[in-house]
Image (cartoon, rainbow, N blue to C red; front, side):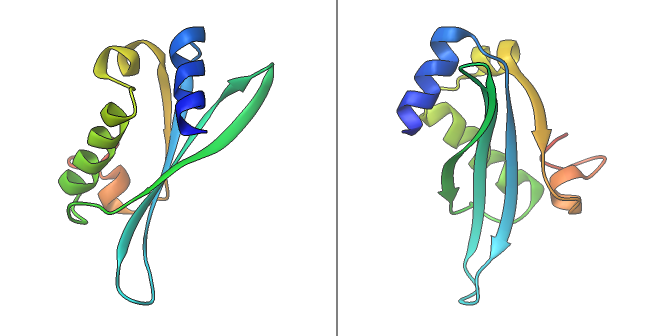
Amino acid sequence: MCTEIVNHLLNSHAEFSILVDESTSSANTQSMIVYVCAYFDSALSVYFMGLLPPADTSATGLESTLTDYLVSIGLIEDVLRKQFIGFCSDSASCMIGQHRGVVT
C-alpha cells in the first residue's frame, strides 16, 4: 500500500502533507508514527505510512529518522521541495521547537 501511495504522489505530482507523532509504549519503547495526507481521486485522504524506531528522541534524531524514511520510500529531496506543503504534529518542543524542532 505504501508503494502505491508513493507512486501516486510521484506520478500525479500531487501536493501532500506529513503528519507525525512520537510516543513511548508501556515497555518504554520509543516510536514515531508517520501519515501522509493528499488528494486521491478528488478526496482528501490520510494514510498510515509507517511506525519507525527513532535514532533518539532529540529533534535531530527525530528529523533524521523521518527524512531517512521518506528518502527510503522514494520521497527524495526534489519531490519534497516541489510537492511537500505541510507538516503536522503535536506541540512537543522536539517537534515544533523554534530553534531546533523537527519542523524547523
